[in-house]
Image (cartoon, rainbow, N blue to C red; front, side):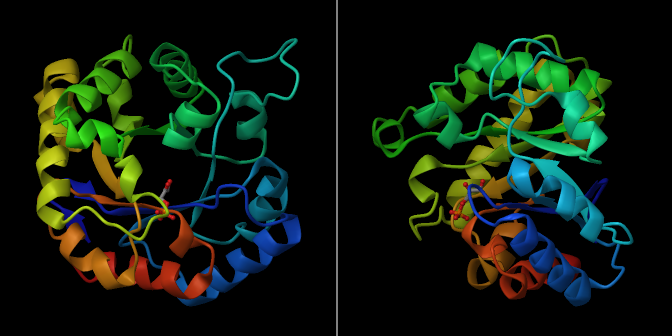
Length: 257
Ligand code: 13P
């Protein structure tokens, strides 16, 4: 269902998991489990090498396809990189940008992520733009400051109109893959701050429309309370997106709201 004007979105980030055929098998199971539901937006984000087979498996489905990264340039001498044009040619509609694993292991800076966000929007791809603090930063009470900087820097040059296609994901780094989830209250506190910040960057109208997903050990057991929070509009799911049962269950929980 919807939270005022925002429809819930459940997105699966498969990270570096699943071959092309394993991905297509998982999508077939997800399709069977979900049928043609349209109450909740659903996106799966396989690795690049599984995008083509995933797109085929999604042909008659309401589930949409996203990538996990892209290069800001359209083409050129960037060995190993993939552009927005290439993703669009594989029927991708979404792309995860600025994930903490890319920030940490691949040294992606706020300004590089900003280039990608702008390039994705220019190419009609919907960025799932990730922000979040580390444990050290949370313990030093820097959460708001860190997340605010990521938002301000990452959204430079983005217009209020383009914001219709923007999705933000709050992923506290200490909650990713650790089994530790932010409590619903902790998550809501940051989501509210993110919406206020989006309001000052893009305007109140745009901020009210942007979906802010929570990510970090979200699973069927803890999803309901998180999704009940006023500014939590869905989830960016890692581990629980790697098999159909919990992923379908998560969509059903969102649909029941
Ligand atoms: P987990 O759900 O495995 O904690 O991963 C969250 C995440 O990083 C999604 O992008």
